[in-house]
Image (cartoon, rainbow, N blue to C red; front, side):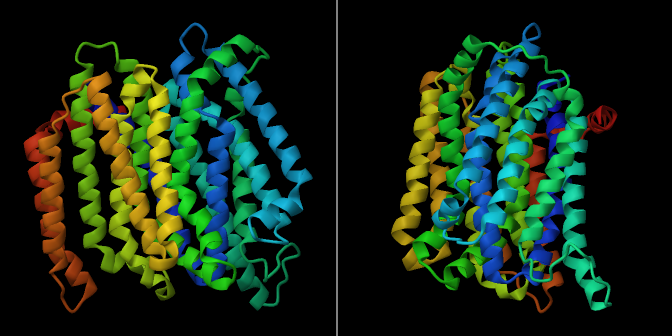
Length: 493
């Protein structure tokens, strides 16, 4: 099969499972913005930022290391060695958390939040152990099974949220008391839902964990860690670039409820950009094992060149779709959060450049020059932290949106320049710039269309979106319009 079509087929499966799952999860946004206060949403946003950072820290680049070192002959040995390491460090993490609960609560400026920390610490430890069997599914090309487990995880989480925030209050109003439910529980039920869904997901992954036979190689682990350490730096810095603003916001804006309200408004609006994030993550899941496996083919660089162009084109379509329909999408949030809608174009573009960076970053992974990935990530991290520290108090959460955009734009440009030197691929940059300019022009033209009805406004802008899609697909990907491709994609899935 054409490698581009194969990659697209896997991206569809990973992306569909991620998109559907995240979309289902996304449906909780209107619930949270209506049953929780802005400050409670701020607490939720802040703590989930810490969770995302901790998961990256505690997996310490082993996913990429697993893809790099696992071959047909030693896959089980690599898997069991890494699983042993991840399990040990996760247990150590739990011991440290439980030993310093009050201090951690004071550090995150939430005295009395020991219950939150306990629930999230256990969830993080379970999720870290689960990353390796998920990586195994990706390596073995079992995208459908990967997607099903992810969807079940999200389904359980969503169901529990609906139970705690809709059914239990309804029963209480009817005079039916639920013994383990506290009407003043607030965000704690979000964390309980995450924990339960993570535990059940781990059980679903047990058949792959059962493959584990205690085969531990210290020399192999050292080689993997040596390779993965720069990846760890990249991942930590990358997560700071994504979550650092939400973590730093309460600290920089100062004590008091206002800082938590600002964090809540920013976090809720950030979630409206989820569709772009889903697209980039679905692409990353499919692309990382793909480019490792395809690197030895003679036409690999031509394929990588096409991948960047196609990814960019579809990303720009998503940008236009979200912005053209924002007058409708905004009602996923309560009206109290509408003031934060101004961050959306910047966050959408930031996520698009993040995906472009994923595509461009293959050069340092294939040449084992992962130290350059660490350097680029640190540069991005400096931009993110510096932008928030210097400008957050003056410009509010818009400073965070500008900073994350500047971060990923800079990293993308630097990666292209260094990749051109170390692993030259003739990306068609003029063509990519052309589509960016065309997209921005379409965006501004669409913003001039304003009718009395929000629905009519969105519908009136849609022909511009279709025109942009037609121009790109007709010029670059005409094979998508063939019956053979559509039939092949259906058969594969």
